Length: 577
Image (cartoon, rainbow, N blue to C red; front, side, top):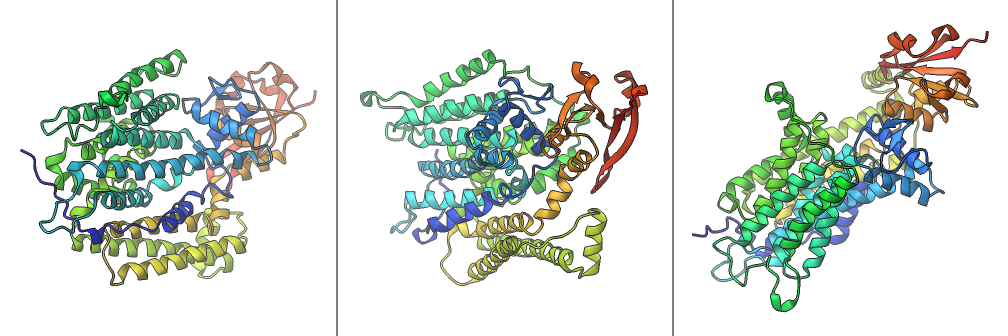
């Protein structure tokens, strides 16, 4: 017996968010963080260093490395993108050129999330209840309104901001997971209409994800999505009119589900032949998992999508096996499960955000006005307070008033000299004025739209991220970049000759090469005897005599990161005998 849909939506509640406003909103979220800043430690600058090595021809394309050290993140495809754009845009600085493709990947993530929700909402099981005398939401208008809400839910997630603005393989995986989910949603809605597009998108996303260092994630995610589609295709309620996965034999179109099932193992075989499928890693024993810290990460990283997603699962509990719920639910479970056992939990959890946003969108047609008002007031207080703190600390940095925030900044970032930028100030002031206008508009008395419950969370997240990337950008560059320490070492050593390095991380090597413009050589290299200076990590300094004849070297200086006394590098100079 088919259970009725819990969504009761009128046509007046599915007004479209103006397209220009939506585009400007996405631009305001995507561009800050990709413009004007240096590569930050550690993953950002590490991946950037690999791309520089590839672009300069100093690394093999199938096994990217930095100074003989294999790339910390597996999968060559994201590094290829950065290196390719460095070569294609020689008139731009390398650190800006690599951000072009990754900015496009973030835009692709937003677009795929919108279309994923749109196609899921177009299915008959996801449609709202038909009114006795008409007036219910039109299917297309309903799907567009939910798609707007899904996009806003994704942007509102607190964990998306920083990781999605880095030039790392994590952003590439995020975009490819969203593309994979979109292709499955499109097959669920229009598998028999132009199925070639769905199959091509599916195959491209699967193969690219495997070449981006996540072959087993691609296999688990893809197999589960295909299983959901297969079960929905053979469900008891399927009729010739609603068999959206079966292409009509008379149309001459291929069966999207069948070809997608073939594409999944074919992509795995190609990736294996290319040497990009490592053995699956064994998960951390359950007793060793830090469940409390993982649960805290889950709470704040996916806020505010996770409570809405849970509400969706409850209100749509009789449609859990229908694609509009089952597809994003499976994608969420795969990423959440991986994050519990991953070394870098936040980066693994990042892949769950598009699917969580899709689930959150389907909560809105069933949400009570009291709950919606509670979300609005919490968001208003939280993000307004955050924006106020950012402005107060910026004002303290510029004027010294209030004295306590200024003293805290001077303590945390010794040596930092604040500077005033009229452009950055104007952008931050304009964003704050837009936030105030939006708050006034939201609390005003006008017709209700189902996406309005997420407009303030998304706008507040965008506002705070934009303020950080404008008002605080010089401070964050100073504190989170290896630029100052690299330039400090460059002023000590002779950059006309090679410099030995021992025990340095890939991020430190990349920063010294780019910011310090040094010719680095590992201490075990044959040409090590010609170098006049050596940079050593304090962690490996006690065993340095096992690799280097210290009778030929004299300690010269310790260079510290000004914002972190625990992180320093040791500089040695060769003794002339």
